[in-house]
Amino acid sequence: DVKVTQSSRYLVKRTGEKVFLECVQDMDHENMFWYRQDPGLGLRLIYFSYDVKMKEKGDIPEGYSVSREKKERFSLILESASTNQTSMYLCASSPTGFRGYTFGSGTRLTVV
Amino acid sequence: GQQLNQSPQSMFIQEGEDVSMNCTSSSIFNTWLWYKQEPGEGPVLLIALYKAGELTSNGRLTAQFGITRKDSFLNISASIPSDVGIYFCAGQPGGGNKLTFGTGTQLKVEL
Image 1: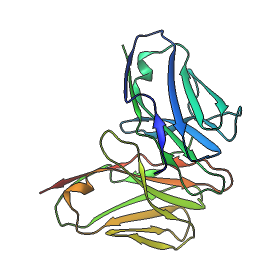
Image 2 (image 1 turned 180 degrees about the vertical axis):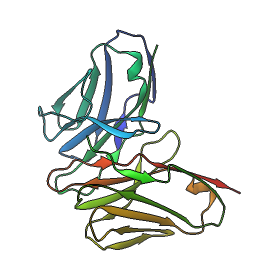
Image 3 (image 1 turned 90 degrees about the vertical axis):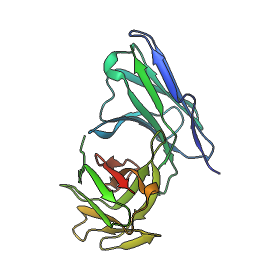
């Protein structure tokens, strides 16, 4: 069964901490994405990557960065966590020749 | 970034009822997708639509790609308790692999 795995289901971090959210896919997909999900706002794209070492900003990149050193792994980095970054974070991947995304189970991050 | 207008925001229905929800956009999409998200999980793809006017079914679910390419509809027939969740529409504008998501429809089913 193909999978997108997010390393943590729940995280609690302090304001100002540097936070790493990890995502790994086993489907050899070229494209990977990070979204955040907030009630009433749907899914908003933070960053995406079409290939190793490539990254592009999504709609709300401020306060975030990403890293893609290997094809299967896409990391989201909160440089200095703030309370307004408390959210559900979803990672997704898709192959070239678009047929929709496969999502991970999400990481619920709380910044206190 | 663009968001799709999805309605209704939430629905509370009786078991056995049919459900309809829709999604509209101010711009054209080449692909429409419908996802379901259950509590504590990521969204799972239900139906994908690739052509204007296309009508596709997946069990009790039926979705249509609007002729104008600016809207899509999802119908669930004879709802059951496990239909509970948040349903998202998503559109791909053509070229590339980025999706734009709707704000979601929360479905609650009363026994």
